[in-house]
Length: 107
Image (cartoon, rainbow, N blue to C red; front, side, top):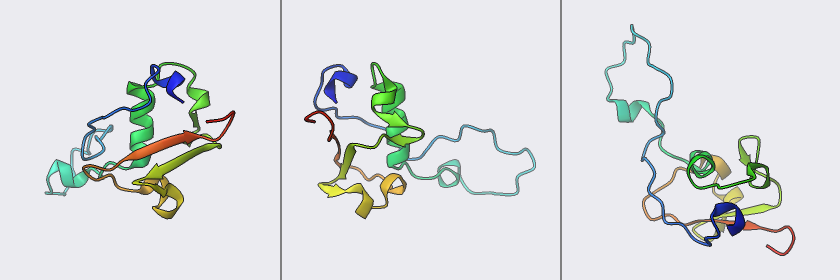
């Protein structure tokens, strides 16, 4: 996996607490809540896309398939399989450790 990410085994990253709103809000919106409450909290799906856009150096098809990691990549959230944590919907918290392990060709 590190070959895809500039030959680094580990990255410590800071991402936004909320997923930035990519579409402008309607002009006649009646919502009076603040912008951070309108935007959903950052989750693992957002992290995967952020990694693709900011850290991945080559061959996105070896890391992602569609909008998620490709089959054969084990994702751990704080040492727990992400399937037990809600997969991509897991809302990230300060200090979370997300690990991606390739189970193909010896890891």
